[in-house]
Length: 146
Image 1 (cartoon, rainbow, N blue to C red):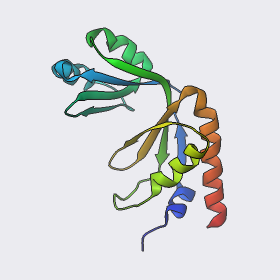
Image 2 (cartoon, rainbow, N blue to C red; image 1 turned 120 degrees about the vertical axis):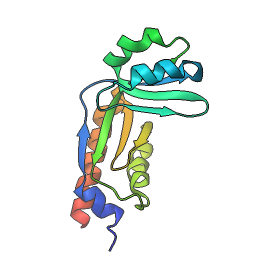
Image 3 (cartoon, helix red, strand yellow; image 1 turned 30 degrees about the vertical axis):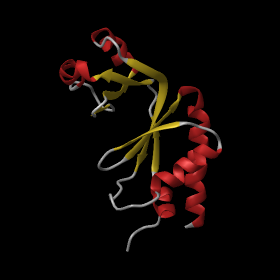
Image 4 (cartoon, rainbow, N blue to C red; image 1 turned 60 degrees about the vertical axis):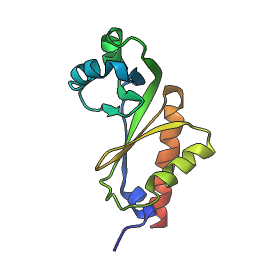
């Protein structure tokens, strides 16, 4: 029997990383450099190659070290990273929706990243404490309802 989203949220552990993160867009013309420089990043980082860009999420201090190698790049930040520490089956429907709905109600913008096992979000650094409180309250509410 498949667990409900509420049951999953109740079991979830929320991790808020203390480091600042930057979201970067690198032109496809720099793809070769991106492949060589970005493949050595330490967790947590994310690199996506699509038709329009190379998009990366990395620690701000790592980006400062690499930035000069990527002319024409764009960046946003600082962000704080949250991990929803529960292994999710890929067939789960509505998990992120339930979480992001709560943040949207409080006008907190997010940048979502999904990996095979877990979901993650970035929120602006100035919204991190408020987002953490909202998410912890959601977890506690789901625990009470189970």
